[in-house]
Image 1 (cartoon, one colour):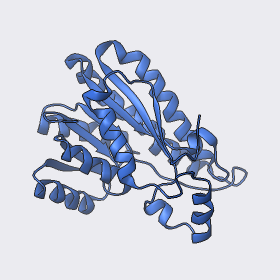
Image 2 (cartoon, rainbow, N blue to C red):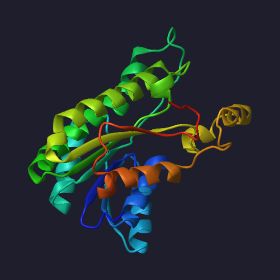
Image 3 (cartoon, rainbow, N blue to C red):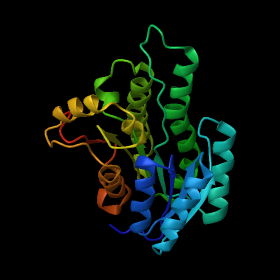
Length: 247
């Protein structure tokens, strides 16, 4: 699954799933534009990729800021000439029961998790249409498929990403551009590491494979969807949840 000659931009690349995706895409030969808010972590990621013989650059970005998105994507294209692969991974949580959820927490999660993906797609779609090749991969969640108590904002944003994926796939398929989503289940990241041990154990009991997933489990699927091997897959939501949700 070589991605040699391709340029991939990954949002939320400083840690967790985004970090693993950046490493996996670089290992497959892609030049990686790593974007996130934490510049120090981005620089460490770039150093890791270049030390392994890959190509990458750091682009500090808060995806909740539309002007930053526009400026960053212009900078990436100025540096590398194009963006072939877009991985919309950046995301946050602001958990609370819906009756107590503040409007600011609703807006923050929807803006970061969903609106930013739409804005990022807008920045790459023109050049993808011209070159008649592109891969757009949105990182959603099992909770966008099942819902989750205390996460009305997060579940809504991730369900919205699935709808966005399907709509874009229909719009641009005739130009050899695919748009797919990956839906991770219970993955070992900084977000889940903070959970109490009893909650983790009860979560594992719902997973037929009997273990929490890793960011690398998700990154492998992203690499596949970015490759030519996945050229005939579009508008698909690939579940990476150990069997937590089937069907």
